Image (cartoon, rainbow, N blue to C red; front, top):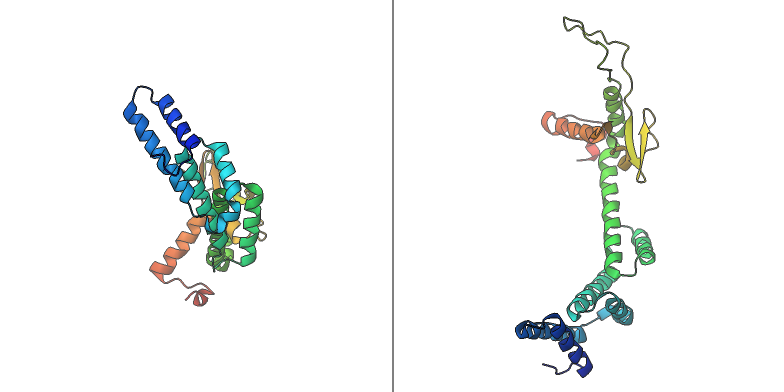
Amino acid sequence: MADKIPPEIFLEIRRVASAEWPDSPEMQQYMVDAEATAYRKLAKLDFGGALEQKAAILKEAHEYYQSWQDIVSFVSEEVDAFNTLAAFAPEDVPVGFVTEQKRKARVEHDWFASQLEDVQQAVEAYRYVQRTRAKVGPIRDLLVRMESIIGSECYNANIQNYSAWGVWEGEGRAFRYPVTYIRNGQEEKRKARTDDLEPEALITGHYKFGANELSIHRALVRIIDMLRNDYDLKIPGDEDRA
């Protein structure tokens, strides 16, 4: 059992197992076997391109974990993350963008798994922006005009806008309901100007009703899609989408 494991390491494994399971020789043996297997796995682990990071990764592992099972799990994940991150170069994303995200991730995190997660999330966000711009950009003026019509048909329910016979009497009583947009992570409430909003910010436009929200621009995009698909609606520029 103790072959290829330094005696002091094996004795410590047995000591911990005895302390954790003083009344169960079976569980002691199970723990010793599991820890010994984990140690051997760590000793044989191929660091590949992360070889220069081996000392740093092992140092982090021993600072945060005690059991060899946890240590080898952490080290394996870090090695995989380092190698994946080093090779990460999606063809549909500019090289400069990916390089900058890797730099930011290194500044923010010591662990390679966290760096990889940040970079992957940034790339997915980039792709989302590109998809949104391609879809919303060509119809942004139409979306803005449609929303303006809807948002300007807001009335105070405490005022009688219909006669007893159902005749509309609310002319001139309408007010512009504000639209809330999210830009750079911050909410902005607007009633008019939208020309400075990128499509990915425009699409976040929503009406707030107390605790509820209505995603007006997303709804309008869905309506336009429905009209295109079900009623063969043609919008200038649609020929470029074909």
